[in-house]
Length: 181
Image 1 (cartoon, rainbow, N blue to C red):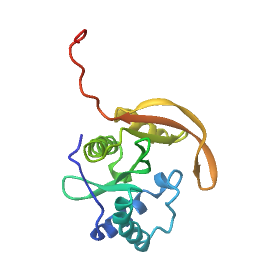
Image 2 (image 1 turned 180 degrees about the vertical axis):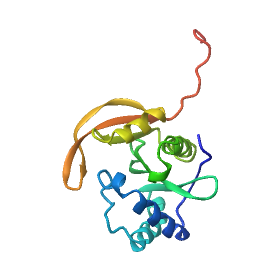
Image 3 (image 1 turned 120 degrees about the vertical axis):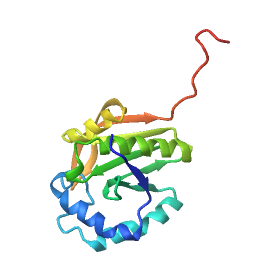
Image 4 (image 1 turned 60 degrees about the horizontal axis):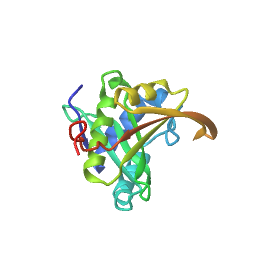
């Protein structure tokens, strides 16, 4: 796995984020409702500026994925947080030039660890459209369990799509030896 770090987005990430999105348009457009061909610095700046309030409200926790030399490799985060039942949806994307190197699966692992160390959430769900094979491979490589297929689960660009549901759960304390009281 490559050397990766996660950190909250900062205003100085605007240019790098726009560059990564524009580089990755063919891969992002089919799956990311927020993505569009004219993605601009204003879009990136608005997203980055909205993240502190989203964290404060417990609406979302988004991170930039940073490589060994500080290069922005993609984003990952949790959203659709259900505080009552202690679960959230986990999402990710990696810029095209970094795909196939374990970046996304590594980021998912780091994000899950952060969530389980810094929140009381016990379950993370990855919902990947049935046609999004790349996202499904990432979920599997990250150790997420495939739980089934959900009909008409995601709406992307106005169209409903069936989706695979994967989950990661909070590690449980190891039980004692078999048969221990």
